[in-house]
Image (tube, rainbow, N blue to C red; front, top):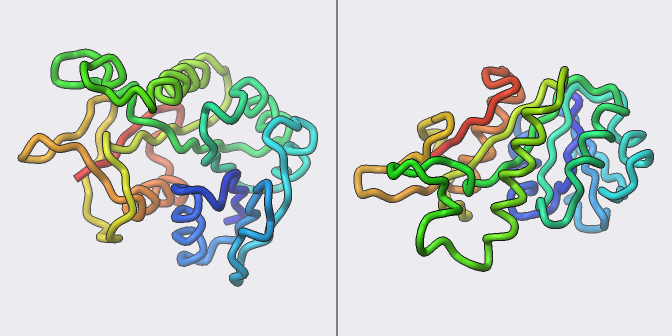
Length: 203
């Protein structure tokens, strides 16, 4: 497939890029600094600005799917969605956040006591982005929320999928490696099962 990946050199974006390339997809890596994109077969770096709607739409045009792996605090959901619509690309997959997932108490994770203050703004903006996507008619979007803790680790290919509830393991922990998150996301790109839905991945 031809994939446009916005934020291809970030914490999650770099793992998604590696997973896409390992499966033989052609990737246009849209980043601020093209020098940070690894020189690998199958990837074409393109300098892009997430606040330039017209320029972004031009870079994304002609692809099969767009993946957005940018921080919600460093982008504008209205502009991103408008650029996707303008590009004419039929599918939009978003690297989401965990903050809007429901905990066993019924409260969203971001509203639970002890949620790290450093991540509050980003988590709330991620939740608002998800609600904005739900209200966008006709757009084939997917929003993949990680577990509460996502960190570099092993690519096992073994994990569970859920919908709107936080996934917990037998010890009550909620975690996923960045590598396995990328596997779940690219699986969805290849075989769509959550169109116009949010889903989540964890151990």
